[in-house]
Image (cartoon, rainbow, N blue to C red; front, side, top):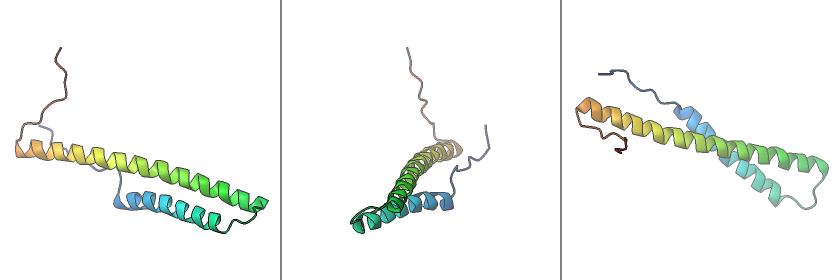
Length: 94
């Protein structure tokens, strides 16, 4: 029997940072759109930087959400094994 405890891949700080990055990027982009009457070159650079921030935030949030869901499944399986509940296997019979 494997008594090794599974450790989560993401801390709460990393999870909170990923959500903050996404929401901060969307918020800053919204402020820029609200204030956009006529765009100058430096404002176009601002939009590009914020678009990159939004893209990174979206990718990071997706990764954290997926990893946390997988970690919850693994921890639930380990808890069931610890309690002696039979865990079904995902093997296909031919």
